[in-house]
Length: 167
Image 1: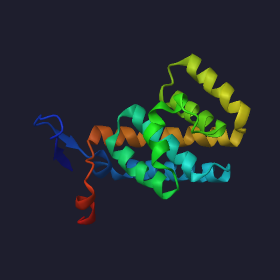
Image 2: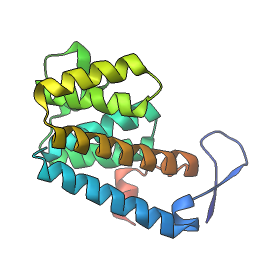
Image 3: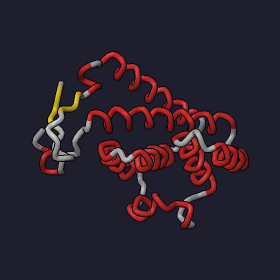
Image 4: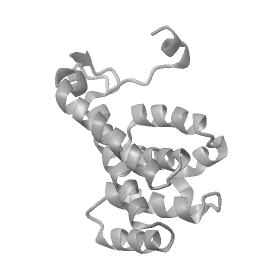
């Protein structure tokens, strides 16, 4: 399936890779579901998982995933205040030590070439997260990074609320 790229004004068409090649996308969904289950089994609550999804999507500039996971975070009980400052989480005291550790680990997973950030994120995570929680957080970040790439490269649209109701 191809769509016109209207966001840049170019006439280039994008392929919705999830629709064009559904089998890899199904495998990605299964990986994401397994990562979410590992997070739940490790005791990570849904709000923390959605914070990781949102922070990674912010770093990757994925509007579609930001839209999806903002709604999921709100449904899980997250506040608009914390969502509003998530991009600057290090500069607030609104996030718990566990959330801060998970966010740092998610950022290090998203930017793997920064060895110093990885080392610092692991050190912080070791203080408040056990091995299962660390592993689950990294898997959640890996999964959302992959979904970000699918949506960014496909230019999945973000629909307005009224438009969503008519679908």
